[in-house]
Length: 557
Image (cartoon, rainbow, N blue to C red; front, side, top):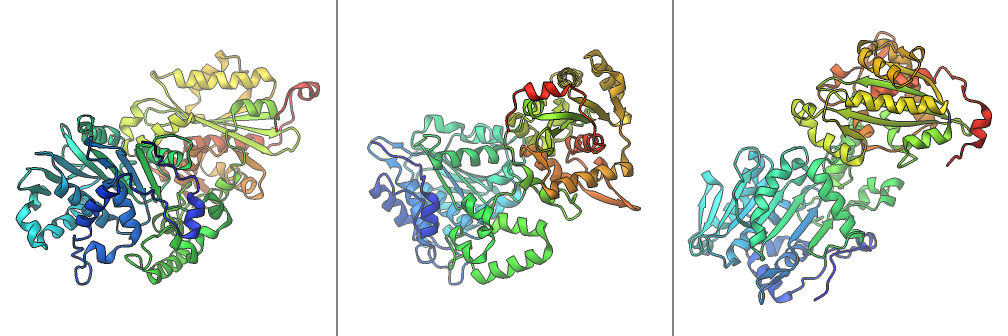
């Protein structure tokens, strides 16, 4: 039997109002499951209607794809993993409760375990209540099921099978032998560095249960996606677009095409129905319109949060109300995706280096800022280093650090000193190329780095201290002006977008401050290193290498 879960024409289908969910592999199995699902009641809706009476057709398409992937002749589920990413208020809780309760009712395995895995206790309670209410308000189900609210558990009296809602922040998930697992609000799991281990424990039983399944259910994150959610979202898009062939994984993502996001069409209320398939059912258009207008009035930060949750638009850079002005132009200036350190060596006539941080609970930030020898644009490349101890000291952002390491933008070193050595080697390469103007450091942390630079062959007179605090205000304003006028260009590194989103500005007299203290545990060291480099490059240094070397050096534009 051959099938595919890819949907390469999803953009066209969304625009035309067509389903992006494939037909079930086994229609009879799908209908048998849907017959149960349609009769379950949504208790908190007016009149307590059944799911069949009150949900849009796409709900049954998605549920049917799950139920209809089971081959009863072999006892195997042909599609074992599902991802549904959809805006808020599109019946996500109803889907979770209804699908998992239906699976419990139709299950044949004695003492089987079904789990709804929630990121917090509060969400676990919210996930359990709709399923418990479906049982309590159905006479036949009350006789068939035993509800234990204090354990967040529903037990099938005849098979002994259970549906349990587990909070990852409190309840243990070790040793589970689940047949079906629904991971609710996956975007919040992305913030938990322990999430991969938790999910691995919860889903481990599927190895010996061929009829088993995993469902990822989530809205978009109101911050740049991180951790396990980021990885699953990337994988889902790759399968959907046909770049990865995995017919046992079904991704369903209600999101705008990139062309509509770039053109601004995704921000038009009249287009919200494209990604809100429950519009007119659980999603009220008047509510969306009013909320959208309020978010617009509140500013870009609030608007991005609204669009993430109600239009499923991924946040690339989180904007704070007290944000650095340059952050507003950062994303659009990522014009050279994949811009590398070697690209700067090939294309620039002079390069200045900025370095910042390096403590045990800090990142060591590095910035190379060069002036293009033809266009005279400023090109920027960043990197960071961290000792594993920072992952322990800063657990709230540890998942982000792991992501940046996977991207190649951050290096996790095994021993203190390796980071400084690697920084010195990069600077030495610039010096050997004849392009190095100066290296700018925070004077408070110059000792060990200076020693490493000199040992690597960098002249000591090229290493200078850059005054911090309000004296860095000129570089901060220069960087934001260069970004705004389009002459500071970078490679769109997610790490730097994160750092820019973390930067908080404090007015100080006639100047401004961006400090690590104001930004808290959210790190900005690579951005501070950038300001150190900008301080030097803004002095308009002259090339030190012979012009013939530039003319003869290969250059990629």
